[in-house]
Image 1 (cartoon, helix red, strand yellow):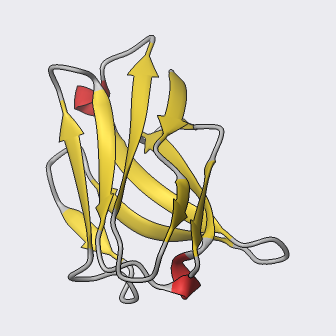
Image 2 (cartoon, helix red, strand yellow):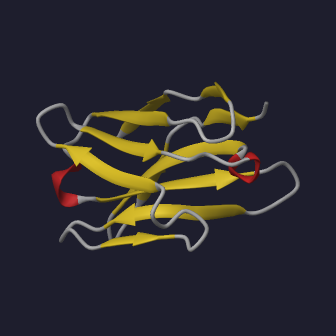
Length: 114
């Protein structure tokens, strides 16, 4: 599976961004999907995941502000981010996974600053 992430950029605190990750090579239908983020010098942390049987989990820090979704028709996964805070600044990575393997997108930078 090849993953191409897009949608990052600079936004002011309180603003919104929508990240997308287009998958090619295989359908996302039988994979769990996830968004992770990483600040230089820190670990890559889970932001949101959606399992292949449609269970969703969010990091406590983004609950109520971020929404993960998948578009089966377009074979894409999305992360809607609202009410962004400076501490959300990071490189965001999309991931797809099953019991046997996982794939990462290339990362897209989100900067929240006034």
